[in-house]
Length: 326
Image (cartoon, rainbow, N blue to C red; front, side, top):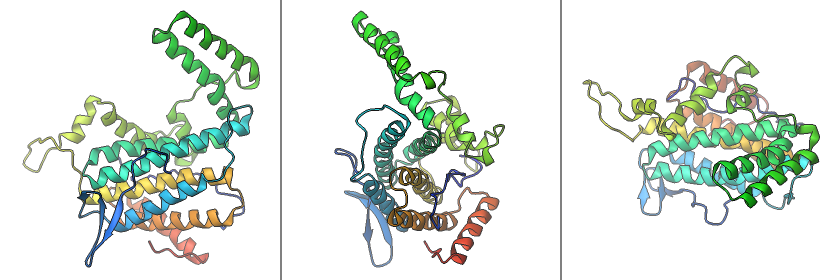
């Protein structure tokens, strides 16, 4: 689904100076079983021949990075300014990335293929929101204070809350507006507007990456009728058969993209919480190269122009002294 299958969100800010998890109760990440002839991704009681075990080893490394970058950091216990708003929100998103990345690996191994497609849409959203909130701390402050209170007020009102509950929600909203007047004029942005700042060179008129990375998978997630075109494919003989499996080639490409989206998030998190940390910078840089190489190894659905751009990036990495192997 989609035209441009290199899903790494373009335009993420690089960390200045760089040669540039599991929460309790979260699903366990998929493990990898080594055999004489192959590497087979597996979970307890299930394995999935045909998927690239090297990709899953890489996803485990990404999962470890998500876990390690959240250790021993100062997590604000509230929001009082732009910095606390961004930090608190990024920690929240890191937990969602952690949960989704582990769950998406299990879905693939257990042949729940369409769930992989839908959950990737969530990783796209988490990554681009992290990037945007980090780049626009005033928006982060508004969203985590006034808009949060506004959303709670609206749900309390529209959900039939008691008079007392609604009065309390109204009072909280008024208090937030009074406490943060400098961002009270802001409004919640659509995800398409947020994404356009960081895709297609920031062209505000080009919405195509948003459509294919987020909008199209959303049709299936929400049960929109157009999703039937994906779940009722027409075979070579012109027959429609309900189908929820994807080809191994397509699924391998999706799993590579899962790692790439997660690394986009990790880059923003490291920039905010671990600036100048060479160990995290190196881990992130190595994983980014690894998943670029894996994107070339699993090109299903990717445009040739995109693959050429990835090859050029890897060539530059090699020229700078990096290792471009997966």
